[in-house]
View 1: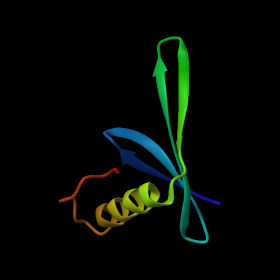
View 2 (view 1 turned 180 degrees about the vertical axis):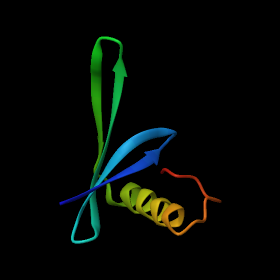
View 3 (view 1 turned 60 degrees about the vertical axis):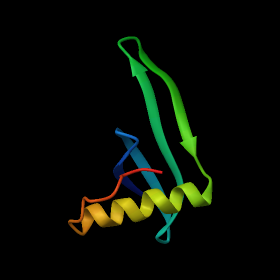
Length: 68
């Protein structure tokens, strides 16, 4: 499993990939008291959009949105 920090909907998130294929994206909702909830995205079409945006950012093209 490979973990990569990405931006999704303006928040820091972790993209989890196996053999280069995205399998999950996780982000948290937190307050001063701690973590309120962990949000998981596992829908393949949503993960493909996040993965493509992340690839554009790594390649130096920040013209598109960074999340699905």
